[in-house]
Image 1 (cartoon, rainbow, N blue to C red):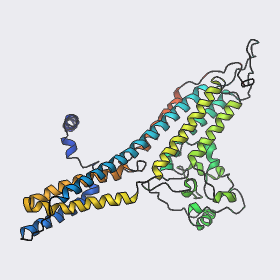
Image 2: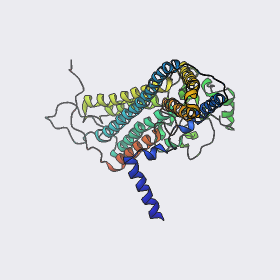
Image 3: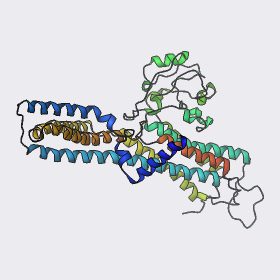
Length: 424
């Protein structure tokens, strides 16, 4: 029996390669579930018009109006679908470029960050040789944190464009370095006795009182299909006083940030915090002499990679924040509805009941195009047809883990480096 099932699956796979038939009768992944209601409404209305025509009530309209309206509706649908797919494809390109930047930055950090040589500088070597008290194991630990911080930028960007703030999500476990938890914004301060400031972006002021007692947690379910809201770095923050295995970064040992009055007005998203920390790490590596093998040009290349990561985040933010105008979508639906409800009056006199399935097919075609455009216009959500950002991030995490566990590090640095003195 099992062999028969496997043989049937192979036949279906082989058939799909050379035939449209499997996809023609496929319901999963299609837009039928989204448009079945409006299509049935048009079908019922067409049936009613056909019935009244059979009863002798003549409601004939001229055939010269509907063709003109069909041209307008067709042009609107083509533009609508093309615009939505451009947004979908641009979102994919931005995240692919972000992934490439993280791969390059992680590889360069793992190979190029090395200890300076420990032996005496040869007399024929010009320039200065930096010295350090950092051991190889300490440097390796710092490199692992830097590489994982670069990886966490992808996860933070994914949650950012979905309007999901804070570090309470399970996929941050094992990715975001614990040392970075000092930037954790939880809406209250558990280590200081001063009165914590209330965040307007986190909801009502009562949330702060609940945070003091640790008795409740604000219930917020972000809608991934909505636009990204303002002050994303503090809007959906987690204020629970309890720590679970899924939230290791929210322990009281890491709640060391003290809020000031300006925090009510200022905001800084988590991805930008990570990018700023990466720039600080690169600066310290350069200052301590760990990047002398690549020189100033190599350092500039690393900084450019971090800047490009921020550029891609901004491009994805633009897609998430810029919805297709509501008036355009409403007008398109109105035009399609007007066309479909006018179509029966021009066909029933000649076709009778045969016009009903024809109008159903036309409604399925037009409404299906509009339904597809609505599904793909916001590519960063959690729907089945949205971009699989979770899989992209997980694949990148597996690559970074392989680098840390399998790829050998670079050796020692070289004697002497150019400090830029005397350059014009």
